Amino acid sequence: MTTPDKHQPIHWESRNLIRAIEAAGVALWAWNVDSDNLTLDDHAYDLWGVERCKDVTFEDLSAHIHPADRDRVRAAFNATRAIIGAFEIDFRAIVNGELKWIAARGQGDDEGIINRVMFGIFLDVTSRKQAEEGRELLAGEMSHRVKNLLAIASGLTAITSRSTTTVDEMAHELTLRLTALGRAHDLVRPVPGQTHAPSSLLGDLLTVLLAPYDDLGAFSGRIRVSVPRISVGEASTTVLALIIHELATNSLKYGALSVNTGTLDVSSSAHDAAITIVWAERGGPKVTAPTGPAGYGSRLVERSITGHLRGSIVYDWAEEGLVVTLLVDPNRLAS
Image (cartoon, rainbow, N blue to C red; front, side):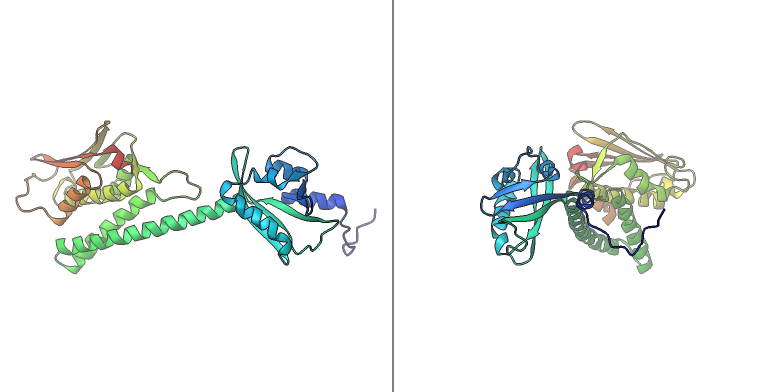
């Protein structure tokens, strides 16, 4: 048995070329510049979803091209003979109810023309286009998020500066607030290819936000969360994160979370008209209702509830523990 010579030149036989073309997913076309007829190979017929026949006119294929791209593609094909060098055009086609991206490639300026026939290829580039659209969508989403977060950070900085007395206290409070926002936004981070608006579940959001305040972790220590499966939209996630942070911070300073014996229960019920979220503290210091004007944090919570969430907040300053009842609009919570 002889060993093939590795330096022996490869013979590009037609069957080998066909194997390479099929492996690359290339569809072949031939265009008669006089009759305007196109001859396709089997892969091209399948790509376009047309019946196999000897000739296909441009109009036959044009019926499958997306209406928004049809005139552009027609003009491009008519201009190909005047183009010097290779040409390529990407366009959308609707085949059997499915949207595809097709790339047509060929050689202009009559180069390589044989018996008035030009040759080229079609490629299905749907995956590449979807990836590009996903990256563009993600870039736009990130730009939108960064602008929103900068605006929120600016507002929080102003609020924190007015509610604290020292630089260290301000830095600590602002860091906690921004960290709460960061944890909340991790839950609604968009992913490429996502077809619906980002959202999180209320139970997941509350657990993530409250975990830092519980030495043993949510659900297993002093903080218990029991809520039904309720979806929270991206915008409401930010608002709810600020509200929960303010309530938890106050509890850590003055309420049930300020002592080892204190507990916090967060529960919820959903109805058509409103979603009720109950924040109940027990086992902490004796509770007394505040007498002075509301602080900036309390006013932030009030504005957030009545503004974006179109609801209300009620404080029950019971001696055995504070109970806060939030009523929110289900439609606004999901936005």
